[in-house]
Length: 228
Image 1: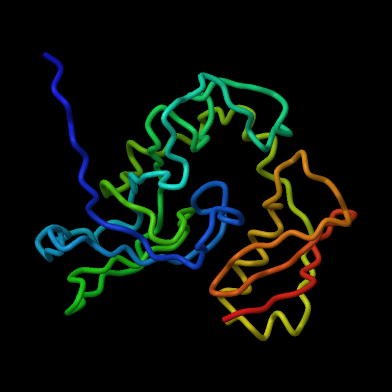
Image 2 (image 1 turned 90 degrees about the vertical axis):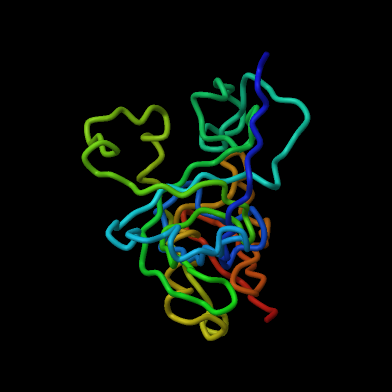
């Protein structure tokens, strides 16, 4: 008889991204900071003892905004223009039989909190704010790193960059680290590849603000920011 396995949410992450749009497509593409907060049952200093010896961690988490009753064997990756279908298991699409994500992040430090127990400070996150985390494992370079590995169609897009122009009034709404993250994300063009209307204004929620931008002739123009 097949045994049913129940996964328990052990933690959640705090980031500056309350919505999916604008989040880096992969971990470590932008220096996005995050704080991993353990659920009460797992707020144990013993559970993370020795974790500071590692520079990077694997996070196993849930695509909490993409849970569906049905799945499709093929998906349309945005980086292929949204028209070409490939097998779901040949992509990192969030629309999967099980909505599980895997990310590698840099561990910047561990801080003991009276309210939350151990808090992990990480950089390079590609997770939305409050994303549930199911497991945390150390990244081991000697077995997890394969420099000669083939990257498939994703390799064709990794060098894609746009110039970014941010109005001074918008810069004043963010601290320097947040501006660095914002510029890096916009330079990678968060739009789906099939959207190329130079007059369209896009909106992206970031760090408590609403960022409005458009893309024309290879340049991202941040035209307005407000909120917060």
